[in-house]
Image 1 (tube, rainbow, N blue to C red):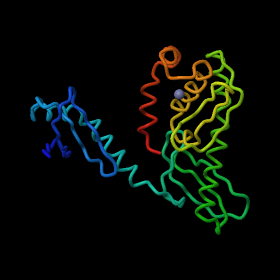
Image 2: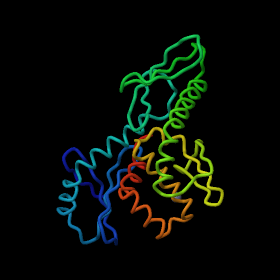
Image 3: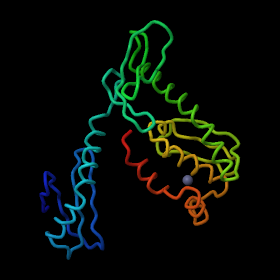
Image 4: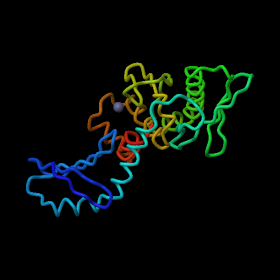
Length: 231
Ligand SMILES: [Zn+2]
C-alpha cells in the first residue's frame, strides 16, 4: 500500500471505486488510513491530509490514550473519567466505611480498607458513579419532560454493553447506561432527550428526527462526541 508522509504523520492510501475520500484512524495503534477515489492524485491527497492535520493529531492521541488506559486495576495514578473530565485515581487506606470524593479538578479519591481487593475497589467506584448519576438525573428528566410534554413511568441506571439508553415506548420505562456519567453533561442531556422522545415516537423515523432537530438541534455533534470520547 502507498504511504504518504505529512508532517509527522504517515498515512496509508488505498485507491478505490468510491465517490469521496475517507479518512480513518484505526485502533489500537492509531494507523492513519485514506480511502481515495481512483482519480484522486497523490498531490490532492497530500493537500487533503494537510487540511485535516489538526483533526488527525487529535484522533491519533485519543486512540493511543484509549489503548494505554485499559484494562484498569483501580490503583492510584490511573485515569478515570467523570462528567467528561479526566481525573487521577488516588486510593487511600482507611478503616471506616468505603467512600469516594472528588479532590478539586484533579483527583478522584477512594477511601477503602487496606485489604480491599481489585474487585472491591471497582465496585466502590461503580457505586459512587451510580449515586452521582442518580443525583443529576431527576432535574434533567423533569426539565425535559416539561419541554417535550411527556412523562416517564420510571427510569433507572444500569450497566449496559451496547446502548447509552433505552426506552420502552409502551411502558414508558427508561434505562440509562451507567457509563454515561463519564461523559460530558451536554452528552448526558442529549441521551435524556433522546429517550424521553421515544415516549412520543417509538422509532427513529422522520417524525422522531424532526422533533429531535426542533428541541435539540446539535444532537448529531453530541452523538459523535459520545461515540468518540474516551471511556
Ligand atoms: Zn433511540
